[in-house]
Every structure is written in C-alpha cells, then in structure tokens.
Image (cartoon, rainbow, N blue to C red; front, top):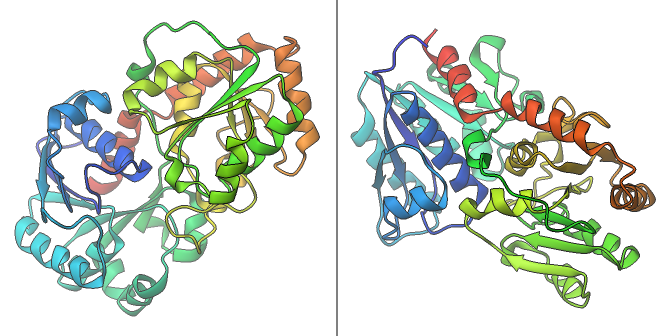
Length: 368
C-alpha cells in the first residue's frame, strides 16, 4: 500500500435500519479501510437515527468513520431519488485527492458521465434501466471507472479489459470469532443469512422431513422467505425459525453447533427476484462459516469452488441429491467425519479471506 493518508468517500444505497447483507458488507469494508489508516466517509440514503455506537456494537466494528445521510425521510430509491442522490453526491465528493468508492452502479454511471474518477464494486449483473444506461454510456464509464467484481463470472457479462478490474471475494474479521465457545448442539444444523428463494430453506425443509431426530436452527429475516416455504417450516417441530439476529451474536451461534449448512439451490435469488445470482455469489455467510471452525456442509457451486474443497475444508453435496445430504448429516452425528481435519482447514482458509487482506488487494489495484 502506497498511501494511507488518502481520504475515501464510500457510497452505498443503504439505510441503517435494514437487515441486509449489503449493509453488513459496507460497514465491514469501511471499518477495514479505517483500520488501515484511511479517513472514511460513508454516504448513505438514510441513517434512520441509528447511532454509530450501536452499529459498532452490533457489527463488531473496530474503528470509527463518519456516516453522512443524504436523505432523512426516504428509505428506498427509485429513478428520480437515485438521480437526486447522485447529484447531491457529485457536489459533496468532487475532491480529486480522494478515492470515490461506490456500491451503486447508478451513481457510478452519473459520476463517470461528468468525468469523475471512481471505483465501482459490482455484486450482480445489471438489469432494467440501469443496464440500458450502462451500455449507452459504456465508453465514458470505462474511461473513468475501475471495477471490483465479487466473482470472476461477472466479467463474462461486463467484458472488461484485464487492467480495468480485479476479482475480490467477500471476507471476514477473524477477531470476531476469537472467543471460545463449546459445541452445545450435536444432532443439529444451523443456517444463518437471508432466506430468499434458493438460498437454502427449501432444502432444509426436505431434510427436516427425512431427519426427524435432527433439529434445524434457522437465523435470518423471515420476511425474505417465500410464504409457502415458511408456512411449511412452521408445521415441523424440528425446524426452529429464530429470525434475524445482530451480527455480534453470529460467532457464538455458529460455534455452538457442530454442523453448519449452506444448501443453495441451482437458482438463487436476492432482492432482484428476476436475476439468478447462483453463478455470481461470494456469500458473506461462507466466510463466517469458515471462521467458526465447524463442519460446513454446502451445495456444490461454481461460484465458490475455489474456496470450498470437498473433504478438505467442507463436505460438498449436489443440491439435487437429497440422499447424499441425509447420509452426510447422519455420518457427522455418528462421528464418522474427520472433524479435526475439517476444522483446521476451514480456519486456515478463513485466514486468506480477511477484510484487511481484501482492502490491501483493492488499494494496490487502485493506486498502482
């Protein structure tokens, strides 16, 4: 890293009372930048009167940075409010001596049109009007923007030159998982994260019906789960729907269980219900799972095949092979799985995906 005195203006379309992984990732990134010595300002839609000290406790942040809200009455953006958001940001951050780091494609397009250099982090393909704008202004965008792609498969869509982008997986702060926590639940599995279609609840429901002696603990925003699946889960006594919890509780929760599951389907959706993100993921929960040092049972997926290795740091099952999932969980219960090996290797893997390592990689790319 060449210069730790550079200011960073970080732009994100979030409000501080949301329960999204987007907000989690943004806060952890700003925290990591700040820990590296950068002066960080986070520009967001709405702070919703949430105090920074509360954020710091709930997300286990280690440093301080400034949060600037652009609106105080709007929680969600449409085209008009996005445009106003971009205009306001243009006048607030047009300082040439700082890095402008955006998680908003719309804002990045706007800034690029007016010649403002910026860095854009992309987590999924563009859609709708944003996609049309991106393609129309492509030349100006490429002239003024460097890209951080969350997954290499995204470049099959964006078609960027090698010097215009790097791939950087999400990360974890290993310090969050330092506390000692004994395993309390043996014949159980735990899942944490969002509950959108394809992210795991459907497969958990099928497993619970076949493994009635197992208990499945699910932590996540229940409002994101498909209604029918949620209702079916409520009918089973061995599924515990425990809702969203503060991130500060996640390390203890994960380390309380011997088995952590990540049962993605072939089609995975998030806030944009028309975009299958299965090929473009770098799940935040994955890195928490690794840092917890427990047995990870996950679906096979091209998106994280460079991270999870079968029978090395995890056990991988085809999402459509329910029998393999059932057998694996039974084998874990009967201690037929080498827990010590998987624990050691998952912790070693987690060390290569810290937020600070991610920051180093990004800064070296930006300032070179």
